[in-house]
Length: 406
Image (cartoon, rainbow, N blue to C red; front, side, top):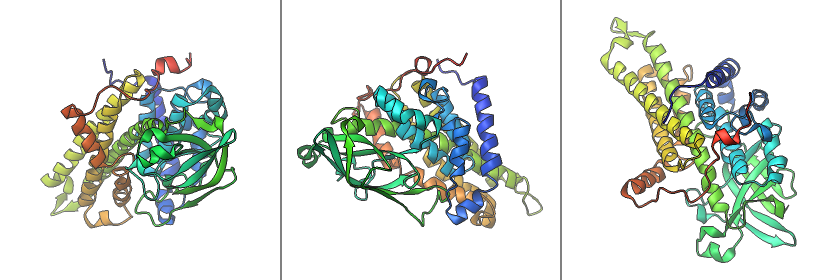
């Protein structure tokens, strides 16, 4: 049975994250956004608070909270700015949770522990200049060389590309299967920034998430040992899809925070602004917009909360996570647009945060599966064309995975 009541630990965590985001980021976000400036000190503070490993067990350097806690953190962070949630998505959701589920004990000790503590920052490399939703369109390769592998390829639109220390690199290890577009020929490797042949760069001129770092990284004859392969050879696609499920969960929770921020900004403005001799809060069409934002927030919050509950129980959650991601991101786009309308001409100015919300929300409708991909997925599930049973790992139930803090 789903319990919607937050625990004392949940409430304390929300308060901690809210104080950090509202107190230490909100006063500066307009400047960082204008300058397209990533502030590295934010990572240090998030690490200090234990956020970068919030749902990773204590035995691996994490804070030992459950998966609902990860959603709560993401919602609070994106209520201030999307770039904060993106850090959680790529570092924790896409990379660290994949290491937790698929890594060997040695890999967890070497990579997961320092990542959970925030001593190392990590990201995920799947998208390429010519391959996004079409994962098997990837051109990156790995060839055997003695006891290890030689990696080549370029990844594009990678969050924290110019900041991260560790990377998950997805590529083809079977050329014949690549020609047949058989995804069982793909594998995943752990790559470190300092490896010879690794380079990265930053993309400038983005529409939104300007306070975050987004870029590319390139591997030219980068040599890695066999022990840097995550999972078994040929499991790269499965790992990539597993990682995306975790990333989608964080995006859903974060987009819910953006809906809430749009609603809160609209409520505050409507209670202050006067037109035609009365507060605009008294105008019916303004009320309608705010009511829709409220409904969208509540529905999106419940959707990601259900997905988090399924994760906590160790149950398949791909369908629930996809639905939460799809609906929360689409509704965040709607909420941000309506918030600008509530603000009128002022909403078109960066004197108010709603124009930033609109610029930021657009990316989430695209990454971790576009709205079109999720629409098709949900239709296939509803039509019975897509099976309910998971073809890949689920996370362990948090009750078993997390070391007791008693």
